[in-house]
Image 1: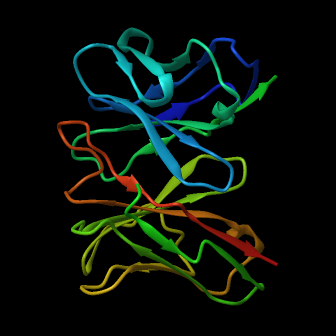
Image 2: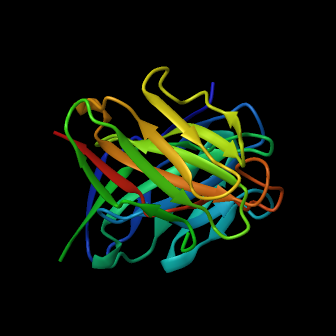
Length: 113
Length: 119
């Protein structure tokens, strides 16, 4: 069965601190992995994606993510968080031939001064 | 996601009324997806449509919900006799191709969402 687990519902970090958001997936096909960000009352913006090649992928806004096949993980990282990064972050998985993306339940990020 | 237009952005309905949510895909896209986001939850797939065809409705509730994507005009998600549990954000996404992902990793483009509140 396909599933995406984001074990951290809410994370609080200080501005300037590093960030890691966890994502684990279970998927029957070769996974294509995505991270999205959603600000309150807004739609989803694609941060980055992994589908092949280098397992460390760079995205927008200084985010990166590392795909670890052995751990079925695709964790999102940022070396130094900015106050504007406060938002909800969603991990998603899909595959060639699939009709939809499966989303995790999200991690809400709070940034404190 | 700049090209997917959803309206209304916010809709309030009383229990028992009908809600209609519209989605205009990116110009040239002929595939539309609807997702629902319940409070404190992630997005759940509802339905995938191609113009004049429903491709996959495995995520649609069996009753009261319907979707269409006519040859001309926007895609419509219709919820009849709304109940409080229908209160959610409804997101539309579009794609120029079959399926949610292509071999280059391109995926679907999301709109800004429509927030339905049932009172």
